[in-house]
Length: 318
Ligand SMILES: NC(=O)c1ccc[n+]([C@@H]2O[C@H](COP(=O)([O-])OP(=O)(O)OC[C@H]3O[C@@H](n4cnc5c(N)ncnc54)[C@H](OP(=O)(O)O)[C@@H]3O)[C@@H](O)[C@H]2O)c1
Image 1 (cartoon, rainbow, N blue to C red):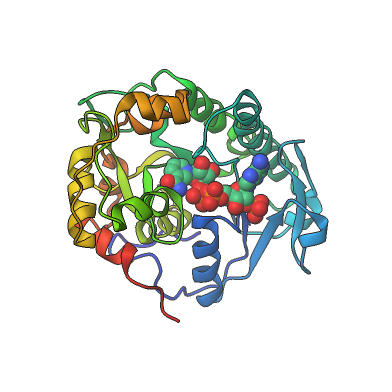
Image 2 (cartoon, rainbow, N blue to C red):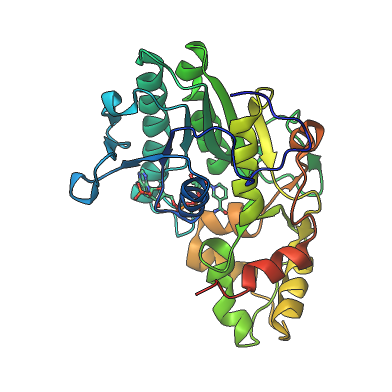
């Protein structure tokens, strides 16, 4: 893909249509990405997990089983890989196995299939997470920081490594390490909304844990930026430049909704409900900096939390 100049913003109408293959297209990020790509005239090839759900032009795959119908990917210009079992629920042994299998087997199978194509795509943009840094207290982490410890860090390390066959075949690979994606339509924010709307929301545990958030618009913007830019490769933190603590996030969400946030949720209650997931994803966190995206010239649409929350809570146009 021709390198665009640093002032070109993602989401603007493209000069040349590109065929883009997308996994996880039914998810929070995938659905919005596909909507924008289609709007801008780029044909989308969806990788779907069930033949029954497949529409003409879709490619059927089995990420957990590591199988991809590679022939259906011939001729795509870019691949965006977002699929993975949700991490936003209690991690039973079975769920943890699916979280790992869906990401590691799925990514490896996809990367190997792309590597074998007669005409390879130029770029594979693949999801990862700032969870790769582990729980780091107040330390500011960027892409040069070491990865951390814990289940999420281990999964993310293996997930990123699984894309190497594509890189070895000469395909540019960008590993986008997403923070908490803010959208009223899904993900963590939508799960938080009911208690906050009732005025019974509150910080989690001490509220001192850092939270690296990013608006859905900027996630899709960063994916399209990474597709477009020849110099976007390797890990990129996709987080807004102003992370907050959980207490600051709680106060901002209360302000955005015009509601008090009087009741902290005690750590023991979260541990009781969510087990290990509570410690890693709710009571722990990262203070991540988008050093590489900023260095490449990406301009955030929502650099500040108040603006991002206002956009996320705005009713979707009918
Ligand atoms: N949202 C966030 O805050 C956040 C933060 C950090 C990282 N991420 C990562 O970014 C990616 C996309 O996030 P998202 O919020 O769009 O996720 P999402 O809404 O949970 O969607 C993920 C998609 O993956 C597919 N999927 C579900 N279970 C699967 C399984 N067992 N095996 C393979 N595929 C499965 C589904 O798509 P199909 O049914 O179309 O296959 C699903 O719609 C995920 O990998 C997620 O871990 C997200």
